[in-house]
Image (tube, rainbow, N blue to C red):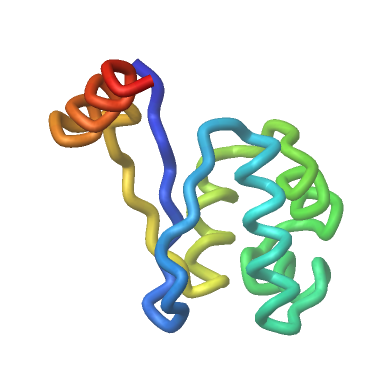
Length: 101
């Protein structure tokens, strides 16, 4: 089973963003930081770390989980961990689609 991390932004109607790997997660953090008009230095200062650590996170490199959570908090984001397996309704739709194909 894999874990999907969802970044929720209640102020944006497009819905939550999901990442299943560190590279995608880093890209999401970068986009959110830029959307808020923050630099890597701004974010690093808010988190209490070096700018290079934020750059590493945005490139999908390993950083401590405390950095990840502090960064998301500084960006005003929530994290939701969900089961990556499809739910019953999604499975039904996939199977119906196979029968019709």
